[in-house]
Length: 360
Ligand SMILES: Nc1ncnc2c1ncn2[C@@H]1O[C@H](COP(=O)(O)OP(=O)(O)OP(=O)(O)O)[C@@H](O)[C@H]1O
Ligand SMILES: [Mg+2]
Image 1 (cartoon, rainbow, N blue to C red):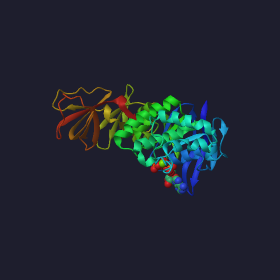
Image 2 (tube, helix red, strand yellow; image 1 turned 30 degrees about the vertical axis):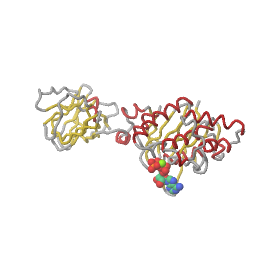
Image 3 (spheres, rainbow, N blue to C red; image 1 turned 135 degrees about the vertical axis):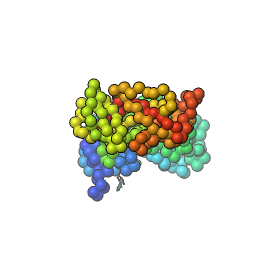
Image 4 (tube, rainbow, N blue to C red; image 1 turned 180 degrees about the horizontal axis):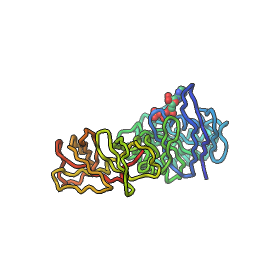
């Protein structure tokens, strides 16, 4: 069953279309993330669902019921904003209980619900503290407990971890994922951190200029991006522009302005003569140019170049090479230890399969 149904939602601010004809169904228990560049309409979409911003057109159902005319507190929605917005003059317990009081929960039932939430976010024993007596990570957990306390039909999280430092952010990301799964919360998370979005959610919704451009599993949006924008926005990528110069055996051949030949697997939709070609850095193998000659197959790309930069980033090594024709490519290889290190100025060969080239 769909807990949330947005149909053709549009919101304008003067001439600016902040949310443009957005339709989105979310099934019970799913964790969905909204991902997109700054200003693409993520927060506005959440605010419309929560009832803090009114939409100009379209319809909105929560739990099968039209909630367009309901006030925010009449909608069964749990909210966590970027800055947590805990009440500074209230204790942890009072903060968590806030939404319960507001929604008319019987006073006798409140303490047990607060206890349950405290144990869920691992803050048992801290109920009498004030927000200023908590670390950033603890405040974040209180805000999450407050959002979940009302047993909402839908949980909206806007940049829930952005105020935390990198290490704590990663720890809490895993914890947040476990908590959401354990309570079976139907959740929409907004984040500009791609890794966070891809790791937290069952599905990713990519927005661009107020519109949804793709919805899919984290793997789908990365491996089969719907368009050039999604391919560029999600993950890292290398790009070529080329003119199609024929092909055979399911492989098309393109020649770039710099005179490089790039082979890509032919696609049924391929009609135009010119195309933008995208290769993910982890699909490019870098081989020492002095080593045995690499055999160039009909479905592979073998391009000679020179190493420009080597950045060892722990588990990965980022290698920038410059091809003949002055095009730069980023390749990411695993840090396997014993493999001889590449050095700047070294002649190399970049190798990638035609099937790893995305054509737009
Ligand atoms: N109250 C408002 N009045 C006028 N324009 C607004 C208002 N709220 C948002 N906007 C505009 O609507 C667009 C979408 O804003 P929104 O806050 O939804 O973006 P966002 O995707 O959440 O971006 P960010 O990642 O920076 O938080 C932006 O261009 C923004 O300037
Ligand atoms: Mg925002």
